[in-house]
Image 1 (cartoon, one colour):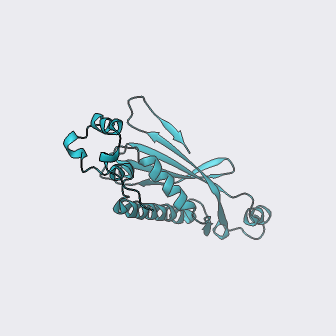
Image 2 (cartoon, helix red, strand yellow; image 1 turned 90 degrees about the horizontal axis):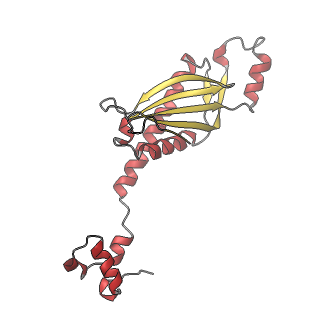
Length: 191
């Protein structure tokens, strides 16, 4: 079912409301009410946002991969399915209200292991833009996995090399936003 209507069939209060909003009275005769009530989605923006989300998720995966041997001392990092995509979507949502958007963002990537936060990486989304906000991302270790218990029991005996360890991330994470330039001072938003 398709619903269309023109203002000639609308009551006079609808017309006066549109005139109050700034529509010139002469242009209201050919005005299609539904053109303004239900705007068409911009497919270019949807495709761009999906592409940006995918590239941001890939940057997070690369950050974990780069950190596994240098800072984590393990051979594998297992990431729950779609975790980096969920994080990327939250990052895009938090950056949407910023003046430079994602381009003005710095992401500090951390890992919380046994209530200790370890710095893994710093991602600058666009080095040519002065950062307007920082996001602190905290991945969490999954403590309910076999690998955690195995490493605990066999850490001294069989697995002396830290590079044999497998780190399993929890599906949970913490993302904290800190605005750098704000008239009301530092604003912190956590999701």
